[in-house]
Length: 134
Length: 395
Image (cartoon, rainbow over all chains, first blue to last red; front, side):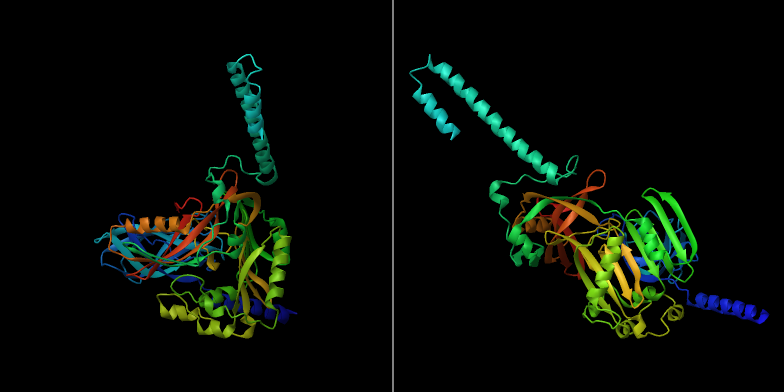
């Protein structure tokens, strides 16, 4: 009887570990253009499913900027619903991830998108590519 | 007929009356009475129409432009349109359903269909052991969220939206199947391939039945993408800055158990697709914005997203559409006004219905053009929306 209980506990632990290994966050490439005047912008990412259910954050990791000295503000918004994140400041630090917290618990397996607005650029325009995780 | 009698009486009785002045007064009274009777008749007809077909017409902020009797004939649009202006070239394919050319369009209002949330829970999640759940009030109404014991087993509902996921397979599918953006590849899966677990039409019928049970009607059209595991394996791509981290997120192996049908279902009205602007930014009429999106595998429905669906109230009042010349003038004016030397090519224009919200969640269905424009130097694709009744841009 004790062996059976031990086996069951071991099986549960093994399953939990497997689930942990398989956990992943859905992410998408983004390309945004934001300008000081607000004209001719492309400030929306593709919609992305939020699949990392353990944390209540979103993440932006820039790959490229059009100039060395550039930045933008970004927030994550639920596609259909009322949930939004706080706004985060994303600077030209290539490969460095920035995290922002949702204002309320953001349900998992729902779609979200990133909305950006102009921060700073010596040219008046910020073009950036990178990865957005909802 | 009325005027002929008046003339006869007037001239015929001229010598018998006390005087011409009195006869003129009589004539004026007669005309007034007849005019009043005719107006009364018109009003009654309008009232009947309103009662029968336009139950939500009152207090609408959008006013359909009055149409002349001559404009009531359905406008026939050419299949293509060519024209050149300063910065804009029209090599435009015009996409209009035959039904529109044959029968024209009719004034229509719409209201939301109501999702039966209790039924949805019982039907879709009733047998699942719930690990976590919450309900909370939001500005959009009550929000309900249920999480099952297995990984990615969730049901989310708010207003008339439902999002359901069962298992991890669809998260992997999203690495291989792209309905929008630079890495669009959905057409790879428009093969019509049938998988052994169920035929496409059978799977769709099952989906329709499920939605009917939830109180929803999806009469319209659908595209079915046959997602076969081999093509998904070949096209798997995980977006990540850290390649090592990305490798961990690729699927270990793909098998035929991963095959599935992805349905994108659109509502149609009078032959035109109905547009669903999502979050006020995803406006394009395309499968990525379809109001019903479902992934169906050998396990049945494992992924379902439902956004607002409409019930339509169509009247018999025809709508007068502007010619495409007028629409083209609006497009050309917009792009010629830009203070750059950029050139634009207008690639296509498709007629659809856009719901414009009035009071109390009632909508006017406005026929509109979705115009696809190519920015020549950047190859960027832009979309512009033009009201087909007024030829004015819709934002």
